[in-house]
Image: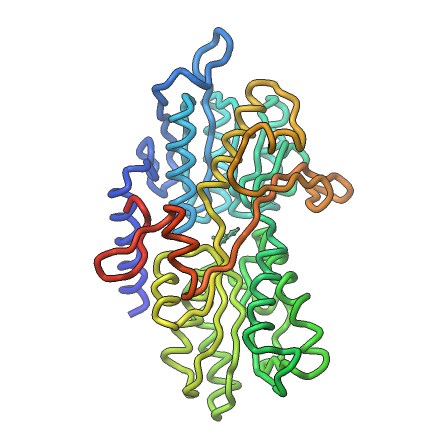
Amino acid sequence: MKKVLALTLALCLTLAMAACGGGGTSGGNTGGGNTGTNSGDSDGGQSSGSGQKTVGIAMPTQDLERWNRDGAYLDEQFQAAGYKTVVTYSNNEVDQQVNDIQNMLAQGVDLLLIAAVDGNALNTVLDDAGADGIPVIAYDRLIMNDNVSYYVSFDNYTVGTLQGTYVKETLDLDNAAGPFNIEFTGGDPADNNAPFFFNGAMDVLKPYIDNGKLNVVSGQTDFNVVGTEQWQTDAALDRAQNVLGSYYADGTQLDAWVCSNDSTALGVAQAITSDYTGSNTVIITGQDGDVANLRNIKDGIQSMTVYKAVNNEVLATLDLAKAILDGSSIDESLIASAGWDFDCDYDTQSYETTPGHTCPSFLLVPDVVTADNLEEKLVTPGYYTVGSDGYLQAANG
Ligand code: BGC
């Protein structure tokens, strides 16, 4: 059954990507980590006298919806700006990603843009990039290597505080009598973002755990215990079923489940639907605005998602990459000169690639999406359209 669901989702994704024509599998590199070079046709991105520049785009996997969106849109936008691109997806496998990046270096890319499978596992290949003088942008996920030139992401800690604050306000923790029962599901411990999300949510909610207003019935509050390897829906589902079976089967009411993102929220929601015996609606948080989760939000199965506009993250990355490749000096002024119609902070303090070595970061601002503002936040700006079935679908899907 789980396999059927996963296959159906994979098929939907494949169809969506094929329909949008955004080039999610450019150069014949569908998930297998093969590399291929695509050529943009406009005349931007030229190096002086030495032809078109090439950007290597290394994405972690096609198994999770968001990286298909990121990979396709990065490819499309860099090509439209006149760069050649090499796009790879590494099946969430570290060795594969190392190999993919090595191939990109061998092909002579001028810039690397990497969303890491494991931020701690790319040292050798990034040292090679450094030795070759190839700039590296850590895309969305920071890489623990000082050869990373810049980091572009959303404010990851704020993603977590938005999730925690949503729970705090929905349960009215400052006023309601409580106590309420809550559980947590975190992200992949190999992803540098995951503890930021978890800590953001926990920092908002811990005072209420400490004063007894919130009760984590399983007692599982440690990031390493609640984490989900590779952000897999099935892993989140399995753990949620175990928690429900062990701690809630006697009829104990569950009020909220903080999930760090949508792929894990999907598993938790499935476990609650199948294994939770209570009749109340459990608050479930998420992140990304994946199509299946937007469905669940509309149906009242998931309560919210923290939306991070991938299109904006891509545009910020493109302008940063252009500035790097043009040899411009880069600082906060890029934000004003780029003229983006979205907010972005330049942060030189928060993210360290090694202890004491901070990485200049461009951090975009995440937003809360619920059933009440789905259309205003996602349809009006053009990120999604409403399908004939009333559910949201990718705008160009
Ligand atoms: C991203 C999230 C995503 C997760 C799993 C994180 O690094 O920031 O948006 O949900 O990876 O793909």
